[in-house]
Length: 385
Image 1: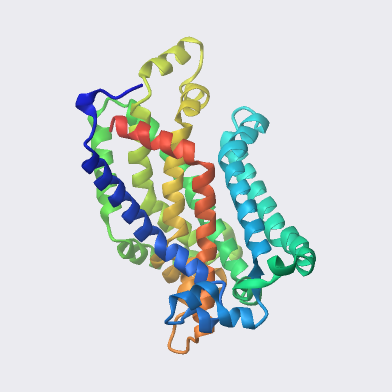
Image 2: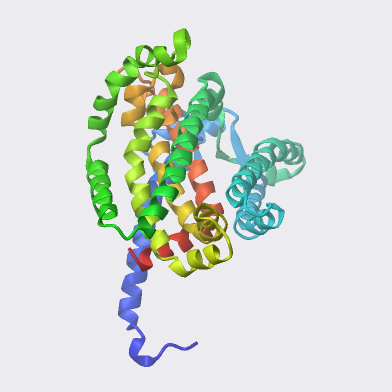
């Protein structure tokens, strides 16, 4: 449909807007792209003063680690195909194969299966195939770009970063599950409540959310340190000490995040007409049945959007996790910070960069898979607050 002449923007304004957005995208993406390039180079190339040495990695290539033109072209094709499948086909596969009422579980299983399949193909099968083709490809099989994955191997295998990843998953899953469970019930109740008490509960929640995280950690710390004595009358001699354990971090992060999830989900619930509840009640549903079978299917975009924000809070947290977790249960972000000290070498710094690049991959995967629900949820939440 053609835009009316009165609403058409002048060329200068369109050009300025496009230029600003392009510049902003370049500035925002440059650090991520640059550290991704550095993570695949030897320390000499990674910290070279010459940008071309960082990109092409002559020292890395001289050490026998490099990609040929055939490797680069094939890898780019696989990445493009994987991206198109993630954006177009994966949502359809998940919707078709997921049983009714298990949409979130279906998306999580689908995302995990897709990620595993991609890793197996890209890092397992593809190097074997290209290793056999490069010797017979002539000039196309000669390394032209220095690249090595030794830093990722050192981080994940030799340094045991997979344990930090596992701890991050435990903390993140606990925070998201508890926050969304309590947030949906509380948000629905407050959105449907006509009492003025609901308003003051939300105000108190907002004040609680504004407290510095260190205040909450300090408040909970005596409880966690003395948790064995506190729980001994209930659990006996098996009472655990929560200090240093993931449960302590989950409790604090839920306390920090819960007011936000309640506020946000209440806004989404307010956009759903009360007539849906009334129609479900007329059909014989209880309040909880109306909430479970009628309201929640409409709410999934809002729940996924709120869940993503909860995920980011728990996944990227540094202060709470570094203060409350011991070395064995440390999550990824504090573990990366531990690479930097007075005795840090350039090899340690490149390994830290490789670890930092690793933890961004799940975020990109989540955004790619849930992009439709996120956009729909943000749009729905913006209509009415």
